[in-house]
Length: 76
Image 1: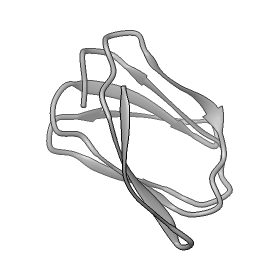
Image 2 (image 1 turned 90 degrees about the vertical axis):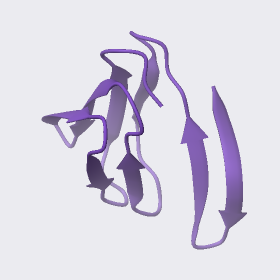
Image 3 (image 1 turned 180 degrees about the vertical axis):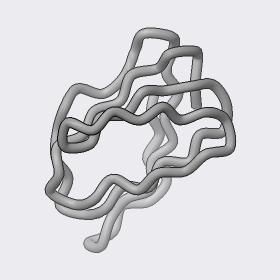
Image 4 (image 1 turned 135 degrees about the vertical axis):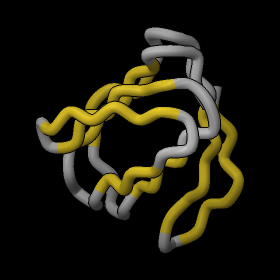
C-alpha cells in the first residue's frame, strides 16, 4: 500500500506499508529518498550494498543509485 502525501518538482513524500515479503523492486529515482521505518523490519539494497532497517531507523538512498526494499516483517 502506498499513499502520496505531496508531489513537487524537487521530490515527493510517500507513505508505504508492506506485508512480510512485499517490497519495491530495484529502481532509481532522480532525487534522494529518505526512508524512516515507523515499525517492522526491512532489507534495503543500495547499489549492491545490503542494509537492515528496524523500527525508528533512517537511511538515505542517493539519487540515481539503484535501490530496492523488501519487508522482513510487516512494515510501514
